[in-house]
Amino acid sequence: MSLSSSLTEIRKKIIRAQRRGGYNHPVLIVAVTKTHPAELIELAYANGIRCIGENKVQEGEEKFSLLPNLPGLKKRMIGHLQSNKINKAIRLFDSIDSINSLRLAEKLNIRANNFGRTISVLLEVNTSGEKTKFGFSPKTIDDMLAVCELNRIDVQGLMTVGPLTSNKKEIRNSFICLKKARETLNSQLSGYMLTDLSMGMSNDYELAVEEGSTMVRLGAALFGPRGEYSKQRQE
Image (cartoon, rainbow, N blue to C red; front, side, top):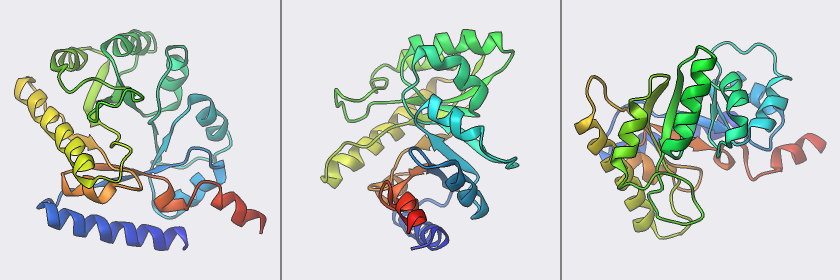
């Protein structure tokens, strides 16, 4: 299936999922381009995608250097950010969607101040409780509120990764948990509201959209299984 056809089908599924959940707000599609070549970013852009997600700073740096000027393309860091990569991340990305602790946020705030820049972020919340995942506990509301008060960080919303299971109830509950965390934070914030809920990937984005996701991160759903694009280029 072509990228254009995949996008059309995904958008139809998003609309149907929103209807089931009773929502009608825009849902941003973030094309996950990790492990794919720079030319795939160009192809995605040519098909109307204006937001990409990379997991690793080094990989993003290498690929972005090969890209032509693509006006309006937003680059989001969606993977775990190591402290020693903060400076590069600030230079490379428009948003860092994986701030998983107050300590990391404080370091980012200092570096962003050194650059004279305010950086948009999402707070990563471990809604499944899986020990292999990074993220704030949903119970650490005070820590998340403290991040929102940092002067060089602009918290736009929350992000989570659904549990690795086929149990739809567990997956849905993790998304409901993120939504409730945003509600709790917004009830205690003064002057602005968190709007984004980045939840849902290729295997569970319809469930996420049913629960109010504003942003889905799609790789395989757009480009096929990992490595398929490279294989097609060689044939």
